[in-house]
Image (cartoon, rainbow, N blue to C red; front, side, top):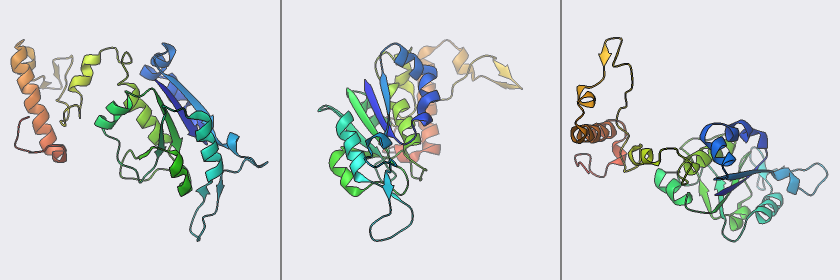
Length: 227
């Protein structure tokens, strides 16, 4: 998979892309991630990329010309062009799985008060990572990159772990334990020490359902239904 990121702050991504699973996946050639400075497509001597909004208002708006020029330079016919925006639909695990099947993503990171609305003609969708406002789209792009990249075949060392993660089937993940068996008087549930894998699987599913019911009941079609 290839991901191109259009941003005013390429340095925002440098450490993140070198660390952990992403760094290893890039090193193995499973992922190609390129960063592009939007100002490179500005045509004036000051490399201006923003201006005051028509009709008045607070803040500045990102100009249409450099954004469209950047998108047209980087995107390909098979690219999925995504604007990170507070007004877009929330990113979900299901959407991340869909995006992970695509060969090329182009992520446009908005800044200031937003982007000129005419940029919409050159993007395929907007994505938001939560119901809150950030200083720019860079943090959202990092979240999207991480969520999507780990679903690309070969990126995770143990792909089976994807099957039991939170949101894998509209349930939160069950509690996990490791050594020591007892910590400050609190022990590991006996069922996990039993060696009865069928019983363990059933316990884990019950725990997932109960945890989801308590913390995220909105994820359950029927809170009383064991799916």
